[in-house]
Amino acid sequence: KLDLESHMPLIQGRKVVVSGASGLIGSALVPFLQTCGYKVLCLVRHKNNLGENEIYWNPYAGEPDLSCAGKIDAVINLNGLDISRGRWTQEHKQRIMDSRIIPTRMLVKAINRLQHAPSVFISASATGYYGDAGNIALTEGSDMGDFFISRLCHHWERAAAVDLPDTTRPVQLRTGIVLTPAGGALKRMLPVFRAGAGERFGHGRQYMSWISMEDLLRAVLHILNENRICGPVNLTAPNPVSNAVFSRTLAAVSGGKLVFPLPESIVKILWGQMGRETLLASARVKPEKLMSTGFSFRHETLMQALREMLGKYRQNR
Image 1 (cartoon, rainbow, N blue to C red):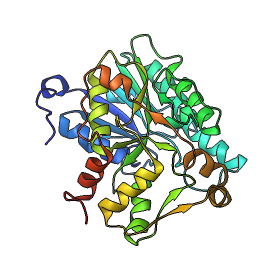
Image 2 (image 1 turned 180 degrees about the vertical axis):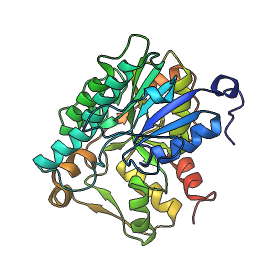
Image 3 (image 1 turned 90 degrees about the vertical axis):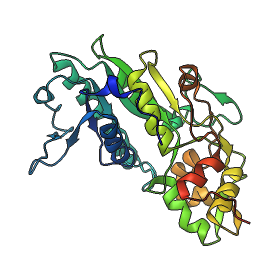
Image 4 (image 1 turned 30 degrees about the vertical axis):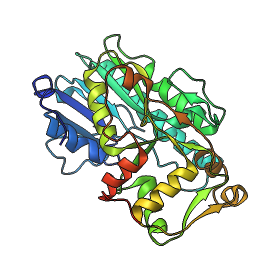
């Protein structure tokens, strides 16, 4: 059970606007924040039959009109195409970039039009910012990598930080691999591992920085109420693991029987640049800002997180 009682007096009556509410993170975050006591308004792309808590917008046609929402305490921006879908052609990479930069800029413009600016603007980013850094421990102050995904995150974060009102605190979430059976990487990997055909990519020594969905939601709540947090924030568990360890652990928890290597050359043939930057790159990311401001993780180890996410409380024999 999450301990939310201490937050309730601070939260009651506060209003949050969320874009990308139908995505993997947004669809979990919206009901979580509502349970915490926030009034959540979702930006949606359909005009007809708008719900009481929905605001229409088309981010490619102009900024949303947030004035109808009254006083807003926070805006959370989660827009963006899934980077793992499709090969990264030049056209597709531009769509990936546009799907993040354009909506973010439109939200910043909308915030500037408000009579009372929100106290915080939280915008998504990713640990892909760091590129391939090998075994180096990465904090929020570490350098940007030289990948496409690194440049993507850089421009995305800049769009979320420039031109905001002075009274609005900017936060960019550098999120790692989010563990939830509801979607994302874990949902795609589970059937393969349960079928006894789990795999590691390349040499398997590359670091994977992960976070459970439960800790991600709790971290967002922490950030909303912690004024000391500003700028980039690593949303990862404190104990990243190598790809080989991740594969062995998932196989053990899910009941998989076989883990075999998928050579680097095959990864590049199957997925091209996307495979090189997301499956073979190493990012050993540490959540320095979260830990320095008193955030405590419920799932500090991968085994602990996977057991709870998959309902497996005893190690398989």
